[in-house]
Length: 274
Image (tube, rainbow, N blue to C red):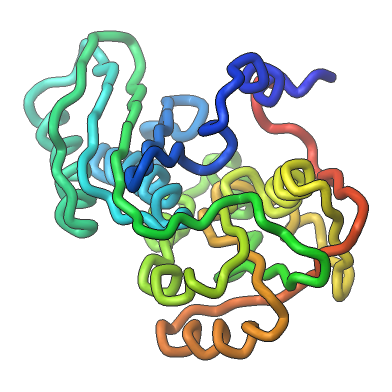
């Protein structure tokens, strides 16, 4: 089956496309859609949680490029049944994120519809962007946090059961302090949005490199999407420094592979455009 996402992106030939955001001078432009019945269901999360997460998934893109959010534009399709209380709840989520990460909401657009769909455009600033390109043979590859819990929680939700409000599916745990401190030692970075294996295949394709895993990894870890942990690479000599920075910021990291010649293909099923 054709990878429709990759095919569609390939139709637009521009050097700025390919990272988590487009870098122009010292600004990073990123955009994410957050759509009802695709990324969430309204009976799974409160409206404030939905609005807050829609911001976080975009802020994650800025963080992994070593950029700090400055302004945001919100596009939103608002269900016709929503009244003032629902609009207030959404605004609380958006404003919570803007206050926490110190950026302004400067405008956007609204339209009425049957479902709740949110589009966020984020403008961020960076002096030294970290990109997806730059892998070198013998670099070490790692990720933050633990992987697999989001898929388990999503399966629980699909069974009609409830999950903890602390779930990373509800509120992604962004590692901003760790990333900004460790960024000078990263050779590449991206966030894990479609699963570790899928995102590794993106790094492999862009850099024409493969990966030698230190040990076998379960598909539950490789294929859990929407984790929003950091996938990064570094020179082997910098691993101890990165580990120290992680400890200082109470961040768990796992070094799991070394960069090699060759290629890596995802072991997970495609989860876009099914």
